[in-house]
Image (tube, rainbow over all chains, first blue to last red; front, top):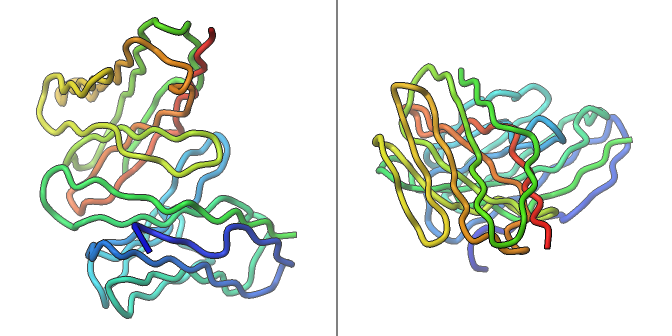
Length: 114
Length: 109
């Protein structure tokens, strides 16, 4: 593994089903983030974690949950998917604090909820 | 929260210069980032400004005026591979990013 990986690459899901999007990074970054990207709206923060064991809500957290049991993994769960959660989901990581610590993004998961 | 505005689309000719403007209103400012995103791919980091002035990195430069809530990304000597979306993002005091909707740049031959 080099950088950030996400799984699955794409998924079609029936409404009401539960789904977990996986994210793993090997850069030992302490901060991790989940975004959704929708046409015309840009990237919006769903949840974040500044360090293992802590999480916080972003701009659009409703319908999503996260956990951060260790440094490397940051799964995003949709408890009961709805069509409005159709989107491209990006996971990102960075060193928390410091000056120009940019966020590095995973390749994304394209999710369609029918 | 953050309110970040940038133009939706821009078109330019190969070899030309394009300037993408970004204006923001923030409840806390801790730096401004520009990212490039090719269609179907992840965003990648281009530049970072936290103090007023110009940061130059090869063909790309980024400018910041904190008092005006304004930044621009300058792309010089445009190449076909520069056709992409360019995302302006403002970082808050908790190191979270808020993104603008992105500017799609199309480079014509």
